[in-house]
Length: 285
Image 1 (cartoon, helix red, strand yellow):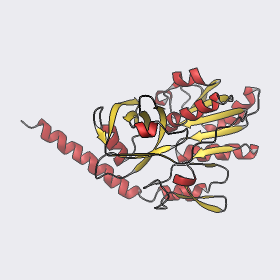
Image 2: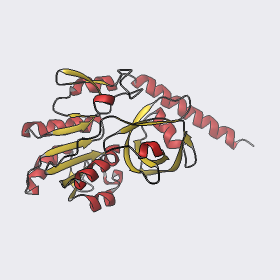
Image 3: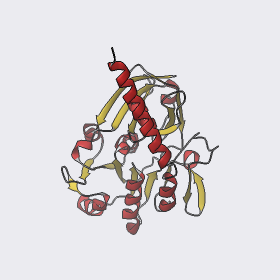
Image 4: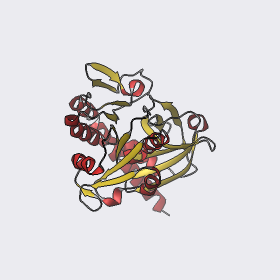
């Protein structure tokens, strides 16, 4: 059991959860993740570690409420317990002296890329953070990044803050910087990872993406998270989650992520029915 110390909605559908997990907090490194369950009978899902405090023995998880399991996680409160929090898992993000690094984060990826940007800055790199969201009300942790990075750039699809559009605006942003970018690191949904990789490919700029395929055990035993990178089949849980975005077979990954859409819709519908029935029971005298 791992106790939830705090849980809050940072923006609509995106939640931050601080969990007591001293063994993980003592070892986790930027880019790694944990496997969690929301209840004893629930499925196992991977969540990137967005922050940690080794002295306090805590880790911070950022997740987006989109399915049955993340819906159950969102319903939990401070003081509740998670039956499973396993980690740290995956290979840490490579942190080197690259020069100028552009970190791109969208939705939950804004949180998960935070420790990566912090480690890159501590290593002496110039760090440019690009936040991407559908609208300004979906942006969070801006103050954290302003204190950390050399430059914070915002892109919103509706133009309510910063540049209007998507990551396709990044090339013109790079031109305005007045310095070359030596590496791009992207965290977020599969669509963002693919778009960013497609955007940077013509410039032959090293682009590292943190993949988020369907995953069960997180230790390379089940093979569910397999992806094609170049000519090789890799397991995202043990060979990743970071890969060269220019080598990922994105069409295969997108198709594999659709495998359980029908089952997920059933799970979401069932959980909402359970909540509705519980509300009815509580309202009865």
